[in-house]
Image (cartoon, rainbow, N blue to C red):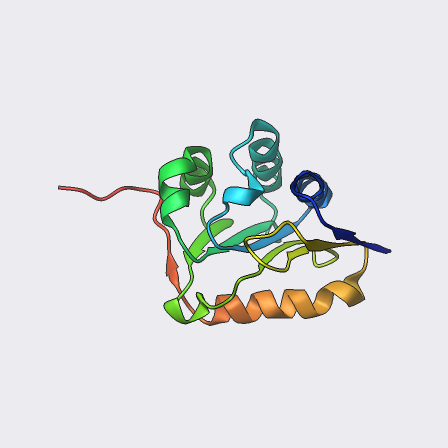
Length: 159
């Protein structure tokens, strides 16, 4: 069990990778647009694919974004995973009343959490191997999902 404060973008980036590497069953993400998480990098897409390939009933990746345009326009590999691995992978556009939230959550297996306190800053807290400390953040994520939203479609509709 450990917890540490993150204050730089490079440390934040390393903490994101650490959380992704520790994920074995569930991954929950709440972010404005996923840009700071750099999920399109080859090593991160490989981790997400590995999580989804397991195809066990408890494998789940849930992403909630406040602004889905970045995901639609700049995350083709993530959108491909959404096509191949739905319903194990869900990407939800949060309802407008959640736009007031300025933080970001990355939770792996309910026991590892990275909380960025404000979307404009790298300042964050990394919690590792501590279910008790992660529980309030997991419950908050569940409340965010329960607030509703619109699932993103992996296909582009057009005329």
